[in-house]
Length: 182
Image (cartoon, rainbow, N blue to C red; front, side, top):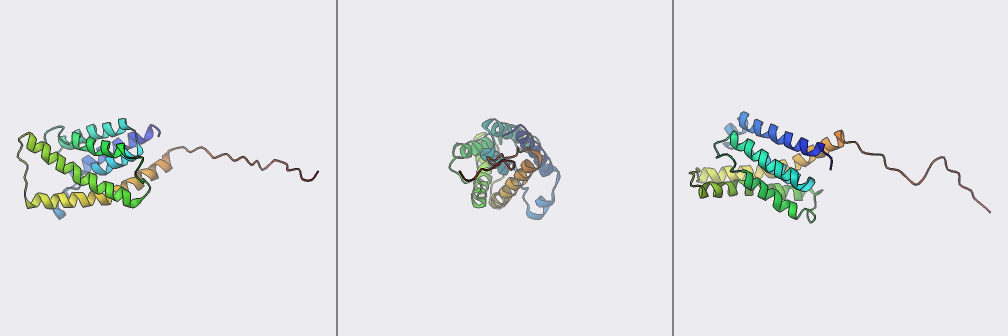
């Protein structure tokens, strides 16, 4: 891993949170604002170090909470838990499989809002719970599942485009002379 990858992940999180707060197209059409942070935490958990996961959870959670009605810092713990649980088992996860990415995006996008609701209830806040919340949770979970493979493809493309790859050396030299016979 190079130092460009964590910077790109954090920059993408900042832009995603800003677009979530400023673009109301999905909110008016579906009644739900799509959240990209769980998809980013899945990518960071499978591709980066624990420091990047922690930075993404803390900074992304604080950015998200500062532009929403949530108390400041409430989404940091759910994002970190989702990232940490995936990071613990990343050696067992088939990172290159689109289905595995989809399932992890589905799990993380469903896990983060539920843990956030539990934390809000623990802090004696009054979140709006009802059938509308169930609809919002289902759409956020499905959209997170669909966006996670897109996130992997985006960052793999950026990595291929921006990161220097050294040429692979071969043991065969074209100017070498091969002696045959006795």
